[in-house]
Length: 188
Image (tube, rainbow, N blue to C red; front, side):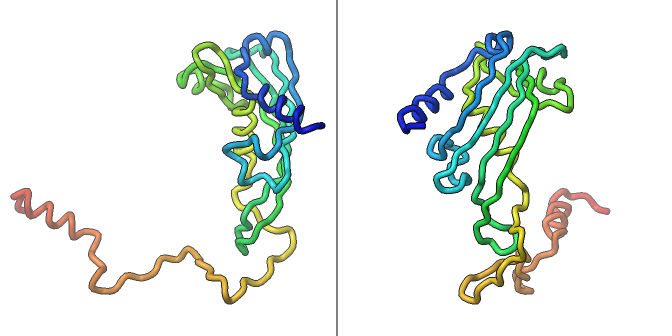
């Protein structure tokens, strides 16, 4: 696919869709979005990578009939939770979404579907939906498949353990409560 065609496809993903119309028509959108077009996920997608997607819009039989099945695939460049070096992690996600118009409606979407709140006109930018799906697919703790290399001595590593405060700086957690009690005039 040429760069010009990719740019046109990307621009089309930012044009607001009438969700009601595409659900009634059973529209299926699919393609690839280049890394540069993913404003919220740009730093996660592997260099030169792209997000492959398929979105199948349909009308469901539930209380919230406007629905879609969203599939995304990408290779993400993430920080390994063990060694803090980059690890390329392939992600693939499929979700069913229900389109609603308010937070109240979102609370009543069945548990197997994700609510997506539309604007007043019932429109949605497809690129926003795809980025949301990709963000939800990011693993919490990405790690290398093989044992990680040892951390080099010249690279500091923090374990997340809090350093102990000096005895003089350490204050009882109840000291502030004692001050408040003294100031209230109560005698216990």
